Length: 231
View (spheres, rainbow, N blue to C red):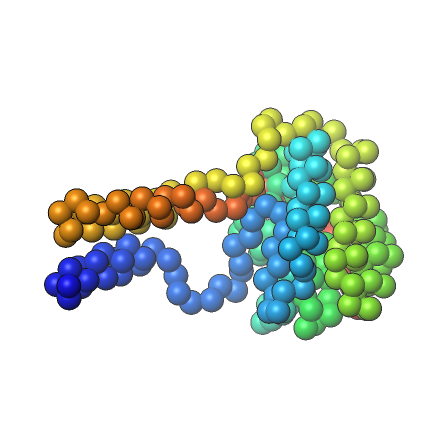
């Protein structure tokens, strides 16, 4: 048994070297809501409700809204954190740059909108600042994170749907996509176990059912515009 287990562990070790173990200053985020707080700021129902709202905006206009909730944006600070997160994840469609990022930091009691190039004519600094002050700040002050995020997202989403002529998405947004890196790892392990157990590796096939991850954004660019506030 030990002779079999050791090679399997070695295969795992080699396969997993592509995944960094250290924490990132800039998180990888996905369509559309990313609650990275501990403990979580949103319930599952609240998360799904926000996701559905962002999905509708994407389906109708191709514009991508990202919501990221974190405990802290330090050491960068919320302005730099928002800009880097937007750029690193390419929020918005490539060539249209129609992304919008909302960052909320619970420990710093701060929020920021970061606006893509393609939406700056619709969502100017004054407008998103007013949306934040009218909808985010009052709700977040009372601890109503969901209510503040939903109302603010609804208002900016309505502005986009009403005034942005980006055309509908060329295809339905993919909330789940195959994770090809994970598939490669499972295949390598499957083959190794198959060899070591002389073909008795059918149990590994169940792992293929969970090789999906949430879809990513389209490759848009930030315009540097936006607004921030405290609560």
